[in-house]
Length: 407
Image (cartoon, rainbow, N blue to C red; front, side, top):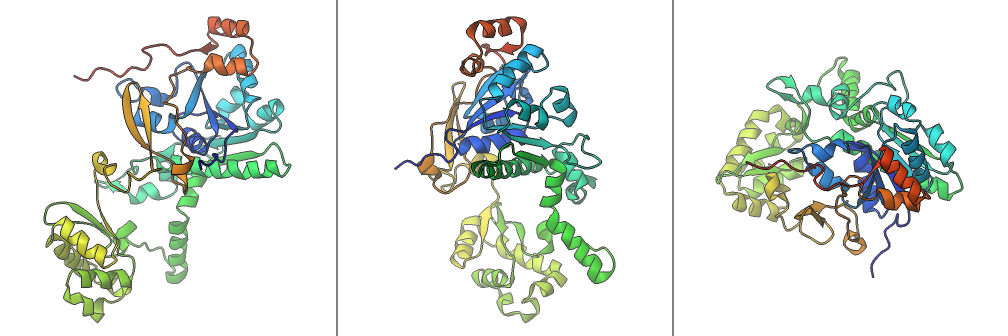
């Protein structure tokens, strides 16, 4: 029997650009909420990031949503938005604080319109001396210790994927769901505030606590080698057929099983039995692991290691990731159609996803649902025509955000 999505019947208004807020509402949509993406006349920037057209970000995180195009800087557009907002359960945005005040969309402004609204603001910094400063994903990386340790040719560099934006979006969802529970208990008008900077602090808390621990123990700052390199044998190694294998070598049991699976004499070497010993002999251990893996093809090594219970996987390029049988299991991918093309888009990972799966709307064109949703919110048809005529709202136009031809 098909399960009812947990947020079925809930309406979420998204006023988001790029990633943090759209990622949060993407998760809420996957949980069954109706998500209305409100965009300015120029659209979300992710609509024009790839050859003048929509990017993978837009396709992956905007399918299942509806689009309303409103110029909030106009009095008429703002009034229309307020009518729409009054029909919602949740409002999620990532406007800069100054922009939220200018557009009269602060928490106080929105609660005056809809006292029971769950108001969620994802911003650069939460309360504090920098609360009005702007921040983005790499700014959060730079200010919380991540970037300093990630260097390309000696220069601090961003990680690549915008993980802090996505973490902030996920934290926002947790806050929204908690606020909904409070609303169910009779507490209305709940506010959720998530800062990218504070998200970065929380994500880095293990490393920050570790640095303090070393200071307490040694009386001076000292770092472990970054990431997996603090544990010899934990990382990527090349097989004889030039495929990269990533090994999970976290503890002494993993090391023993690895040595036994690969037929290494080090299985009985007491001088390398503990992680502490292996760290002291890092280069020796790395040489042992490299030689052992490179002596076998990927399939041979994987068969030996998996039989012994050693965690390993291939380091895959993006174009091969969705070929894996694990990725093709029911409930893991959604088939999304967009402009005549088909996309396999990973869904929000949760138990029972295959049973709760609903047909997903394709990513909306800008303003595709403007008239439908404003009229349903109580804006009269003649008022909608006036709003269209003065440019306060827009509807989808063929050819908008078209990809440039590939030469």
